[in-house]
Image (cartoon, rainbow, N blue to C red; front, top):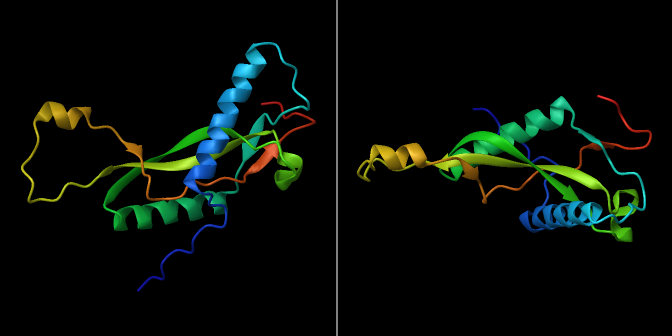
Amino acid sequence: MKNPPAKPSQLITKEFAKQLNVNYNNKKAASLTGRAAKKEDANAIWYSLEALESYIDYIKTNGTKDGYNVDGIRFYFGVYPDDEKHGEKAGLTTLFLVPTGKKIENNTAKIQSFVMLQEAQSSDIQSLEPMNYGNIGRPPSLIY
């Protein structure tokens, strides 16, 4: 029997993920009003294949255990809180990953109407932790 996957080391809490996203949205809104940034921000985020494969293995295995058909990963922008706890990343943009999927209906329930099934979209799976802490591309900026 295959050993269960190790929990990835880059997981963050859902609360912290929400804070990162709110910070990002607030920062973007502030930049539109003409406030200058204090320092040059990240313009790219990099994850190793090993980290991504580990996260995919984690969400597929644990999503199934939680009754989901895991079908993707949603990428959210965030901004680290502007405090010493986050060191050089304080106030800079980040990118975090959240698994998506559909709850698997049990066979005892009657099939819903075709229209309702068509409208059912994948949503963020709240029972699994988001992933963060990729390497950021910042000064000198990366060019794509």
